[in-house]
Image (cartoon, rainbow, N blue to C red):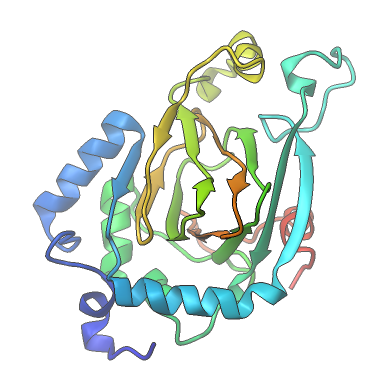
Amino acid sequence: MLIQKENILASIIDLQKHPINEYYFRKKCKAELDKSGVLVLDNFLFKSSIKSILAEAKAQENLAYYCVNEHNVYLEPFDNNLSKSHPRNKTVSSSKGCITDDQVPKKSSLRALYNEPTFKGFLCAVLGETVLYKYNDNLSSINIHYAKEGQELGWHFDNSSFAITLLIQKPKAGGQFEYIRQFRNSDIDDNNYHGVLDLLNGNCTPDKLSMENGTLVLFRGKDAIHRVTPTIGNRTRILSVLAYNSRPDVSLSESARMTFFGKLN
């Protein structure tokens, strides 16, 4: 989808519904994120934009690196000094395919949106950041995730303070985003082991997000535990992750790149 530079936002985003360049809209969105830890903007992209991005994602799907990772909810190494039944050593599974930034077409609406100054200004205003930078490596800034039938994202806390995603294609069933806010306090190293154990044993009821294609989600997942339930049916769940840093010249670690992408560059 080729886009004239001066019409970039108006070509991709429904600015009538989501006037991201306006002060009061930004203020309202920030208040919602600060209050609930999540901001959901449905129908953020025009259907034509989603159609174009989905076609690109399907065309590149054969390039996706698929992996299954066994991890704990803290995304930290297991602790041999603790029992296997301790929440730090409880295993959950995550499985998906991923294509990396270098595999996203240069002329993609997705890349145009990612780089657009007004969009980044909106994100800064809502997230309370001064400036946002792309990753310094050529893999990590824009990723597209594929979850086929049975694939899921296990319960976990994020290492970063925020996540930005766009749903490109919802599955026929499953693929439900579930979360519990303020489930730990990372500022004081309170990992809420008791609560995590209850959750993993099925004794907690999480909140759920309903999303349609073209939905933009900003989520604070550092202290909110969350997961995506297994995809049901033969329609792959396709999601784009737009990753930024608050500091320049930051690359994803080599170990993380090998784990998630299967390559370094």
